[in-house]
Each structure stands twice: as C-alpha cells, then as structure tokens.
Image 1: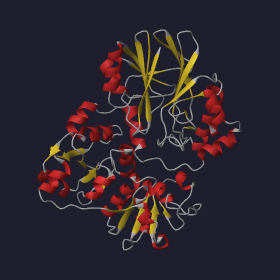
Image 2 (image 1 turned 60 degrees about the vertical axis):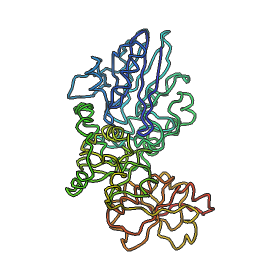
Image 3 (image 1 turned 30 degrees about the vertical axis):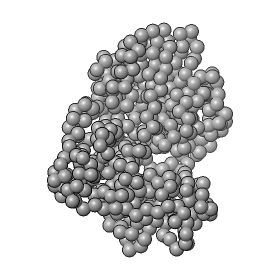
Image 4 (image 1 turned 120 degrees about the vertical axis):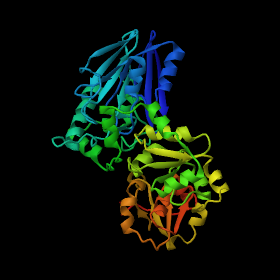
Length: 461
C-alpha cells in the first residue's frame, strides 16, 4: 500500500493519492489534473475512484476533469446531490482498492454531506483516516458555511460534535489523521502547522476533542468565527454543479498584451493585479495596481478582496504568467483578460509612468511611535497576542469596508505579521485615493525586535 500527500502551501490544501496492487484513488484533488495522472503513470497504477470529502468552498476541485480523463468514479458521502454523475455512498459503505479497503464515515457538521474515509491496510488493520474539513491538526472545520433557512451554525456545530465523538474519537489511537487543510486555511479558526497527526495525539492536544458537553462544544467552536471569504459560496456551487475544463480556461486566459494593448485595457476599466513580491511592487508599478504576490497565499487573497466578475490584467515576473493564471482558476477566478508581455521592464522601456510605494523598516517605524496613525491589518486571532496601543485594528479582509472611517488627509502606517498583507493593504488604500501611506517592512515580527510594547486589543473591525 502506498500513500502520498500532495500538499499545496499557497492554498493550505492537501490532496491524497492512495494505491494498492495497481489500483489508485485520489481524495480531494485540486483543479489541475496533471499531478495525479503523472503519479499514477509513474507508478503504473489505474485511478479507480475520486473521493470528495465534501463540497469544497475554498477551491475548485479537479474531480470532474479527472474523472473525464480516467474514467474513475466520483464518490461523495451521504446526502450529496450533484449536477454530474457521481456515486453517493452510504454510511459505512466499503470500497476496494487493490488489496486495501476504504470505509465511508458520514460526519456531518462542517457540511451536511461531509464524509471521512477510513483506510484499512492489506491485513485489515485501521491505518489512516482522511478527515477532509471535519478534523484538522489542532482544530475542526468551521460550522457556519452550510447554513440554510432551517439549519443554523449551532445546529451544524451540534452535528459536528456527534460526528467527532461517535465516528472519529472511537478510532484506534495509532490511526493516522490526514486532513484536507493545514495552517492558513480559512476553513478552520486556527489550524496547526503540521499536515498530519494521529487520533491519539489529537485526542490529547486538540481543544475540540476534549471531554465536554455538546453545548460547551457548540460555544467553543462558534466563538470568534471571522466571516468567510465571499468567493466560498461560488466555489461550493461550482464543485456541486460543474465548471469549464481547466485547459480551456488556461488557453482563454493566457493572453500576452503589448504595452499599448495593456494601457488601452486599463482605460476600459480593467483592474491591474501585480503578482510580484512586495519589494518589487514597492520599487515601481502601474498606477492603481493592486499588489497580491505569488509568494504567499495569492489566490485566497484574490478571492477575499476582489469580485469574481472583475476583469483582470496581470503583471508577473517573466515565466510566472501561467502559474498566476492557474492559481486564480483554482479558486474560480477566470476573467483574466491578459498579462503585460515583458512585465514592468517593457512598461518602463516604453516611457510609461510608474508609481512607487513608500516603505520603512521596523527600526524607522519605532521612532516617535506615539505620533503615528497605525493600521494593523492582521486577523482577530493574531491580535490576541498583542497590538500596538494606538493602532486601529482592521483586518485586511474588512479594510475596504472601513474606508469611510478613515481620513484620506491623514498619514497612515500599515503593518501585518510579516509584510505580505500590509503591502496588499497599502496598494488597496492607494487605489482608493489614500495618498499618504507607509508600509512597515517585516510587520509585527520585526517591530517587536525593536522593543515596542504591545497591549491587549480593545477595538477591532
């Protein structure tokens, strides 16, 4: 038996390849199919099933395209309804993969169709459980994404409590836990940095698996939930109803534009998305370009900050064009009109205007701190570890909604944890008419090295 976790850090997502005696299955594949096809070909195996743990909200799955290319059957847990052919399994139904078996464990709570898959090795021993968004390392799936008129987040949290206690905690302590996400995913509140664990370790260390009443569990898992990104509803629907073939999307969106063509497209109202690093963006970009760098959680932040129907123009480093377009397609953003051929170098050679961003080091920032207007764009969970006393606490996801509370005549200093999000925030503010903005390099991590005192947060948005 062979298991491989295919982890994608920029989405904090884990897909899985499981194989026994020439037969393979894929669990929760990303939208591009090539990695799974190549792995099966390399190992001389046939992909028999594609198992989905639930209707993913944070990315568009590759289940439909992969099934079309392999003839593999798509399998969902009980109660799932799809617009394409899929096998809706029964609770505790067994599937054979070579000499191994996989049991369906219906675990509603994160969503109603959520299922975990318990893998038995060739000897019949419980080996691993693929928990999707039901159980993470150090956390559990948020229960507010499948709310309906007759189903509240408390109802879902109660179902999650039952699923964990009746289906997950009863497994052997040495069973390996393989979740669908790691740290940074918005599918949980505070997921740990490890990408796998064991049932025994999670029963000892995961707050949500400690002995408690159902009412106490509901309270703790629904506490401090931040609003999910707006694109989540769209992605869940695409995964349920179907989507355009990924190769067709890439062909349509990969469109090199000359400087003149790029400039004319801007004049038509298209948004420029600069995907280079914060340092590169700082040195010069196109006026009103928004910086969301490929060097971080690029696609989820596009999903959090931009309307899916907004036509996009891309600035990338040479050779990064396809990556930038593919990663957008992974979260359902398919309206890329083109990219600047030759990048910013060509723009500069043509003598076109360049806009720069002001940044300072943490050391410079720490001087005369009390005289500065500061915006901390980290998340609420990060603020708990301490904030600068006079800082305005506005998470990046909420920043644009709070612009009316800010004064465009004031000078604002912006920081996050490490500098990635603060440059996004600075570019977003600049695009919206704020002219006096300074990005703090290195974020709170570097600021603390300058002996700046932090206090408990008192105000936040």
